Length: 173
Image (cartoon, rainbow, N blue to C red):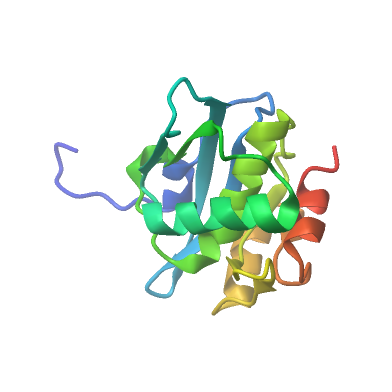
């Protein structure tokens, strides 16, 4: 501002899309910046590849983690992704580097491939193992409280120990 730096009381709003309608391929997660919980949105787009080697494009998320999540989705959840281009991005240019975003990335990709939106009241966080298990993350209570404070009523996390159960809960609409 013209007055210098001003406080942003709720920075989470910067990292969410403003769509009133539910759109497939989006999932909200809670990350930590220091001790502060931030809500951010993961978006995914999945389309038939026109090349022999499908594209994997990421923005704001670790491409190696996305590659691992794609392999787990294919092997453990039965989603056929090997012939599809996959694009994964965050809203607002935020960088999400912690493994807690794995579950939101997986849900966004599954939502995109099935063209089935995830409800606006859902937030997801949890690390995904190669076995398709959802692992607990640090400071889960802080993440849950921030989601609740911002009006999210459904939390999908390590209470769903298997990826297939977490996907079913997120895509139940």
